[in-house]
Image (tube, rainbow, N blue to C red; front, side, top):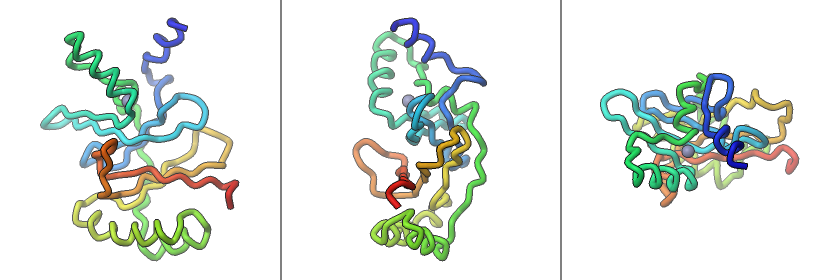
Length: 173
Ligand SMILES: [Zn+2]
């Protein structure tokens, strides 16, 4: 079990968490929580120019970081942040409000979500952030789940990066 854990910590070009560029300007990415299985994305931030700020919203990584810092390893980065160097440059499709309506029709988002996104649209423009980014699913033959990174100013205690992940489950349609 220990050996397994150690191996999980190794990040390389061929073995890393599936990571996608969301907003290069702000150093925002999504990284899959796990290397295998569903690969539920979470948001991470890694700024490499100017300040060296980095943040992973995975709660388990906060504990890893705290432990490392207590052990004087100030430069510690969790596996998600270390995977950023291998991030895929997705076709960042900045969706227009007109195409949001078809997402509602197709059952990909609810009407409530639609209105929420419309409200956020203006703010995302002001913030120069992409409103909604479809995270490419090219790691799996299963097309059951589609993940989106959505701009949101609804900052919860566990998310300070102004974005949330929305999931569509095809089997529910
Ligand atoms: Zn992490």
